[in-house]
Image (cartoon, rainbow, N blue to C red):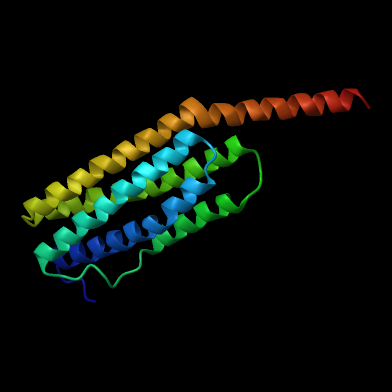
Amino acid sequence: MKLDSLHTLYVEELRDIYNAENQLLKALPKMAKGATSPELKQAFEDHLEETQGHVERLEEIFKALDKSPKGKTCKAMKGLVEEGSEILEEEGEDSVLDAGIIAAAQKVEHYEIASYGTVRTWANLLGEEEAAELLQQTLDEEGEADKKLNELAEEIVNEEALSQEGEEKELATAGSRSR
């Protein structure tokens, strides 16, 4: 493929995002299953529904462009999903693992925010106003998902993981005193 115009690049990036979203449709149920915090599980389940909507919006954009959404693999998302999968396979304290899952999920959200922001800007430049509005909707939802993950990390998971750290230090100190 020759990237000979902004429009061609725009379509290729949309294909990349489409593939990324489809990878997430497979990864989010695994993340929900791996999370131990009920609030985190619910956040992933909610985001799964939103992600289905993101795919539908992208399909709507491709239909208007009279282009196929298929044909590209998002290598960045593949790597991010792989990193998240590694955390899901680890053993450890529930709250610490949840903190790791949130970190992996936020990396995904930040990647999506960057991607959607770029294609939204290109849609505006190319006069694709309806597409720009749909992309902005998704961008807003991705921002909200990131904000929700931040709140969960700050209010629940990170505090629990930190208290786990304190308990381990107390046990180690008590163990060394008894020797």
